[in-house]
Image (cartoon, rainbow, N blue to C red; front, side, top):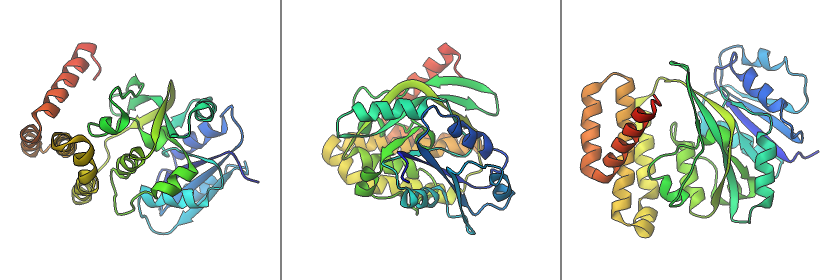
Length: 293
């Protein structure tokens, strides 16, 4: 039996958190789905916890070696038999109508719209601050992705499987930003739709970052998309994107309390694209005025 939707949940050492994610899928008002939990080399009690689920739609595939989220998602994609694939990170949750709303949107959309995302609640675990976000892109999604990947694709994205097979799988050489890289590839061919409702909760926490792997991911994104961005949007747009990547590095330095390196990257970002820094300052001012911090 082939289900309409395959939900892919990659997990690494989150035995205590993944239950809430799985239960949020099992509560969906749309029922024709399967859940593929990809155990990416966990060393905790994940497999024992998963045995507690008796629903046959919950299937677990375990691997001895931790190879990252890109590999885990690719495993799920290859095993999926459904027309649609939805992704959910193991520490996030869905509202009960999430799948129903996305499927309705996609079945009414034209063929070029091969994926949708939804609005979401961003829950900052450290401060317990929550705010609702509805992604928008007035100038088009690919251009928006030069600035940010603020759609939380790991938990809001639903894609037609045929589109994934056409574009290709997630780059398993990337330990970070593999979803951002994939979306840039996707948007060169297809359109992204947005269901303007808050249907997911993203539980954000500051996790330890491997700086070497992070720099590798940043450099790979810049190289992968340089030619296309310059050809279709110009050198200023590419510099804007490079400036965005510098800000991502600055963010990591800030959270690791490396304030000297943080300031150097901010200055580097400003030198590459003053427009990108101006946009950042406007966003910060807006957050302060709204007390959204």
